[in-house]
Length: 193
Image (tube, rainbow, N blue to C red; front, top):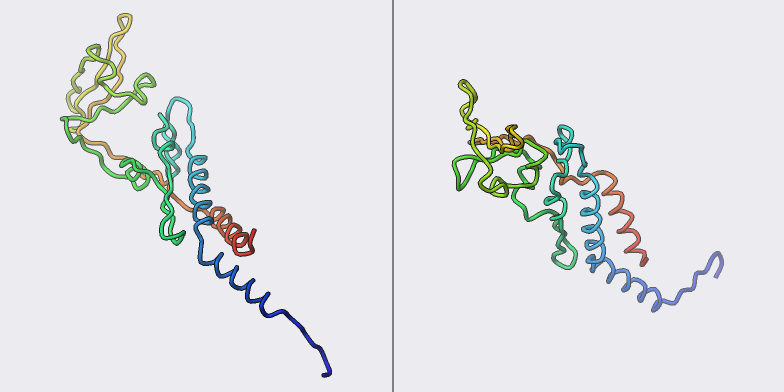
């Protein structure tokens, strides 16, 4: 025989191909890793703002009590063919897409308007709260405020509203760097690393 000759152990090649097929078939480790990555990525994108101001327009919501950020989780399905990442909290979707909130069991929503009331409910203040009615000519959804008296001063804590419009603050997004991470992780998995 002239030219070039290549000798190979066909059984060894077949074993390596079978290992590769097994790794491609079982994507669960990649899905687990990517789910954890997305939870970390989203957690780090929630800004902390002084005085509990909202995050920048169009950006993720700012952390107030941390409930949404701390609720993020992921679930791998179908041996790694799918991974669901998100939150079980209903308001996560409202913050992401925006929308209108209306009271369900009461006449009004209590919207915190003071650093003293952030992350709290009106009932946390007990009988100390009193209602100040709205001024004439205010918007129809404005029902006044709940306040407390402290040292002779009136301190407003909650606005009473029949509805509140929440602007979209997208946070559940997959960014180019997340796709890059997934690509590197897939490569490592297929190569057996």
